[in-house]
Image (cartoon, rainbow, N blue to C red; front, side, top):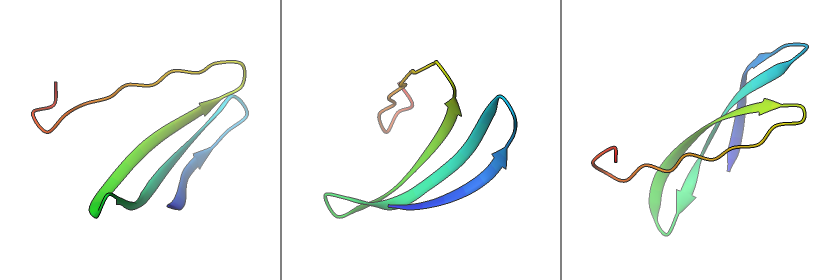
Length: 47
């Protein structure tokens, strides 16, 4: 996956990852924060 850094600050950073998973084009938006972790998953219907 290709990473594009959108923002890098003292507390957090924002990156967008683009690539292919199982032949499908996908985009993942990732917030990086020291000492914290979370994951949100959505299907095609945004559920």
